[in-house]
Amino acid sequence: MTGLNNTNSNSVSFTATSNISYTLTVTDNIGQTAKDTFDVTVNPNSSSLTNISICANQTPYLWNGQSFDSTGSYMVNLVNAYGCDSAAMLNLNVSPCIVCVPDFTINYSPFYNSLTESQSWIVTSGTVLVLTGTNVKLDANANSYVTLNPGFKADSGSVFVAQAYNGCTAGAPQLPQLGKIADANPFAKDEIVLYPNPTSGMIHISHDEKLTGIQIFDMVGKLIVNQKCEGETETNIDLSNLPNGVYLVKAAGYHSVKVIKNN
View: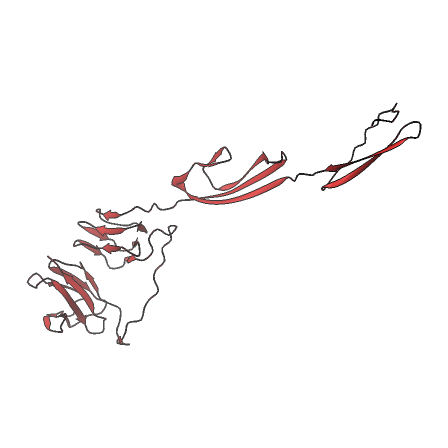
């Protein structure tokens, strides 16, 4: 410092843990003193944590100049904006997501996918069979539809769900809650299984219990077909001679089902 006769030079080290002002007092060899005040700014180290979930078809995942293709925790050492150490950690989850396509046509048989999703619509084309013991779910967007064309059949003992509900929600559609049927017969059983629907002619009806007959009514309540079943659990009815329109299929002990006749 000016004005002091310094013959010795001593360095003083110290550790600062926070921003603070320091006063330095210096005494020379003839007893003269001087003071100086200075500010110390302590810049912080930093750390970050990133949690990412991706589908397998989105690998490799690029992060801080590195690429990763499997589930795990990864860390890199960086320098932050203050020039201090920075530790960055990545928790990466790679899952085998099902790709959700804009639309989907099922044109092979037997069909066995446990889950098929679409952003728009799902439609069957030609012969499509869901085999016994197979669990199949079709899920389209809530504003779209699933169409099962003539030729579709789900064998007895298979589990089959077709729904236009949520479509492509992280690969995990959920079944809609069951609604109550207004004025339903409390003793009625589940709906009969009827396909194809819509139909251009022949319909196939499966029912768990043996029935004596199945009736088909038009939408004004007129009896159109009175089919005797004679104890079978499966019945075929030909609607080829009926005009295009919507008809109601009824069987004792079951909820009625609407069928669309459309050539």
